[in-house]
Amino acid sequence: MSKEELTKITLPEEMIPKFWYNVQADMPTPLAPGLNPKTRKTLTPADLEPIFARELIAQEVSQERYIEIPAPVRELYKKWRPSPLFRARGLEKALDSGCRIYYKYEGISPVGSHKLNSALPQAFFNKAEGIKRVTTETGAGQWGTALSLACQLFGLECMVYMVRVSYQQKPYRRIIMETYGGKCVASPSTLTISGRAELARHPDTPGTLAIAISEAVEDAVSRDDTHYSLGSVLNHVCLHQSVIGQEVKMQMEIRDDYPDIVIGCCGGGSNFAGIAFPFIPDKRAGRKIRLIAVEPAACPTLTKGAFAYDYGDVVGYTPLLKMYTLGHDFTPDGIHAGGLRYHGESPLVSQLYHDGLIEAQSVLQSHVFEAALLFARNEGIVPAPESAHAISVGIKEALKAKAEGISKSIVINLSGHGMLDLAAYDSYLNGHAADIEFSDASLQESLKTLP
Image (cartoon, rainbow, N blue to C red; front, side, top):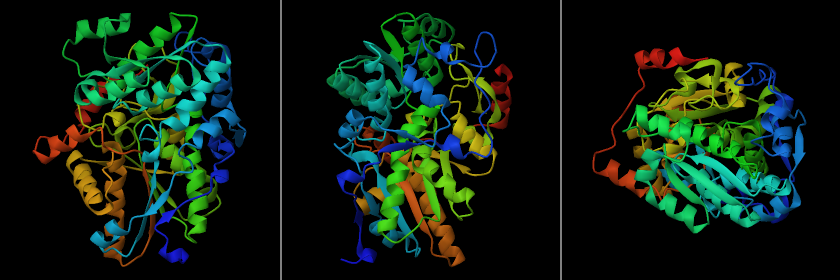
């Protein structure tokens, strides 16, 4: 079979990246420092030690271009890495755009998403430090699922605070977390001071990731044997996800192709960072490549938010980070892409967007599910609602190229499958998935509480 005919582009096991790629080494503008939430002074490693493993703190601030992946973590990566890159021939035929469309499929991991790429090293480094228990938040449940499994593999307890609306929409996520040995509760809960306070103020709240983060951090700092773990946003999480883009570059080289456009959905930013960041050095060297982050119109952090210091949670337990934000008090509507319902954005993604090295687009929920159905019916994979945001823009860019009479190479990060998200599909198919846009008036109100 010729390279042109290849549909599934695989790599041998020994080609799993041996190092994580750290984009901080190649950024034209260094990140603004994080600030201590109490003193407002520049954050120090000592400020973070009560909640994070020391090695993760070192990765958070590192300027090293490559950081070695520990052998035990890389060995566990072998369960599904390198993940395949597929040529979307069915979708190409349906669109008749003349574009070459590829998707990097992270849904083959044991938990069905890209989240295990970071959950495993986070559990590993906490175990190495003698920690017994880890707390976290989760939106749609992919991160909570991944961390539950990772903790089980390394012999740690896992406590997950799951955003209430997703807890109700996606009961099977809770079940699989508990199957892996994790404990999952709806957030806001009655287990924490911050959760009880939020319920007192807003008894019917759908919950937010910011509230769930407050609960998880509060839980972690209340016990000496416990650390907190975050599944997106922070530098070390984006670092771990870089295995995705590194593999894509090798796979495209095998195919004798190079992407004109790379697309990933974007909530906190780790999935998009994972596929896009390894291409930043090429873009800075003059390569004409577009890196597009896609977010919901109901939670348009990059496309409408302010570039400012803000908390990562509601209460103000977390450090102040310079990022694109809708305001930490923002409560997004209960859209079905629960993993993208976050008020803030990764500081790394935010700075690169501010510097013009990446782009951002927002899409309506109906367009997301239209794209998801088209993809499923032509490629046979039911994508997660989050991933379908990237698919939607991939289709849009292919049709735009067709109208311009141009053939482009487009790579989409299919960050997870949607087999546990069928209630969302059922809602759309029965006409119950409403289009929601975040208004400018709501934005101005939300930004009033910026610190």
